[in-house]
Image (cartoon, rainbow, N blue to C red):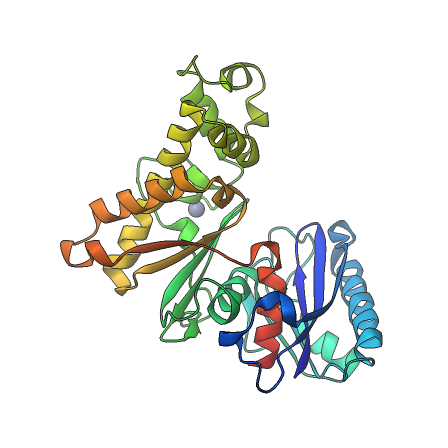
Length: 326
Ligand SMILES: [Zn+2]
């Protein structure tokens, strides 16, 4: 089967023509081999729903033109950054897409192109992609965490996405790890996201590194703390900066507290971690694992596995394609 996968991001729409052909099961092929064509265009989010939908139509049109060479696409899957009613195909009100409120995206795209369209939120798409093509293969249940501006997550339970009773499940980033903690943009206090979300990292890094004059980032922490992005921190850690390494380890330990709660609640032991700061690698992953192990019931301690995501920034697009085919 040839399908179109579309990942609508806050700034860019990534789309691909993806082959999920008979005999080529997701379990036995590398994901890169099945992407026949890729496209990326600006989202034009400030133009509201009509501008974004116009961009979606443009990429669908282009990919359908390309697909006529390789067997014609039959279905479309779309990942959206925010809450989605998967059953009805309605986008509710994504925080990074201004002006969207209850937009029946699946019906609009179906009406234009005359083929089935499935939509889901981007974190669920990323989890589905990791389940089919990436680090989740071979694991019946796992939680995929995407660490970006927010902390997205998708729960794969007994081989299928678990969306919750009304489709709003998997809000891992808004699990509270300290009820006296900092304010989160959701209105709650002490959420995981208020510590490790991209918007909160520079502030925490400044507080930490301003007490570490030996760090190469000490000057930045005092003078331009906004520049302490996950990439800068990860690069410094990779160069051996002990302050940056310790900060990233602490970041992992904070996430590990919520991981432990999820393990205790669901008896799920595998966590697939991707997104910007996941690029920091060892200090972050070691922090998550040690903290999770120290906070879970002893029966879970040896089973916990913290795995890096494999699909990078194509996870959303590939997951949308897998969604279309499911
Ligand atoms: Zn929150």
